[in-house]
Length: 457
Image (cartoon, rainbow, N blue to C red):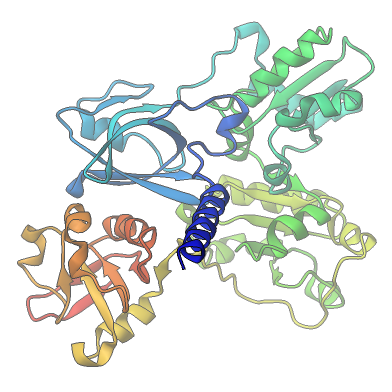
């Protein structure tokens, strides 16, 4: 019996060791950050995501996961490109998606930020930079007449979502593998661009190409964001399929050909758009603040599509692209073609935040009597908010207190979480999901009356 027990213990220990070996630690940096940086212990590198001043918390996105961090305004240091009046103002000045480094301490099972550094603009010598106006003139001429070689050095996945016309994709992380694609003439003008003023990939490419002996290389520092604010971009038929259609990424696909011609063959999901009816179209178009990706299609990717795209950009839309080669190029690539009636109205629904519950589903469940719901409604607002009304039967735990009050949360029931605007509810979602709770959150605004009735925005 003793021998069997010893064998069992050894086997159990071996299984635990294997399990521990298989459990890969969470990355401390977004993949894109590792191209240029290493990350010390006690630090994260990623994209600033959500800020909840009411609960002294914020969220950092690291690729497809999120880290929730607490902070104390009295001790947190925030470094931003522009000085701010105080910590709260500095944090508010960091846009969602901006690259940040966060240094933190572990306290009572939570991560407490002590330093937030917002990535500053890259430094490029004046002689190494090319401005938008000069780039515009070159792109209008084209590579042959303008005698230039334009390089998008972002990862391929970003290039496929839309690029500056005439650009080729030579990603900076794979620079050494693509040296053979550079011009043979080492005196030719090479222009690099990437993801904007804080992106190091184009300055990094500049250094590498100079080391190879190229004498006339420059950087368009504003990158794709700077171009997209003023001009339409382009993407190829395979890119449209791979980046949007195959991934079911929401977009607006506009076909500006005459309806009679387009109905004989079009890209599935296309909406017919009359070039003469831009004003009417814009009245029903998704709001520019939603930043809908837009792809404009005509027969050949010519002036018709380009003019329509330019009008959309002038109306305040970024992320507008023309399909290179138009519908003919789509057909030539042997990609799927639909026939019949095109869509008549633009419908765009942004992809929901991971873990969010639809407003309709939340309303349906929360409107039931508490005994009939079968789920827990978790209200993570502060006491000064909940005292004015809560949904009947809701469990109220302020978001900063969640980790200390986990015993009040059932693991055998679904949890629907809300706050007042969605930010703290999302923070709660990520905290509890990582602990194994079956939880979703309401992403939108909610107003709760003293009677327990509620209104969703």
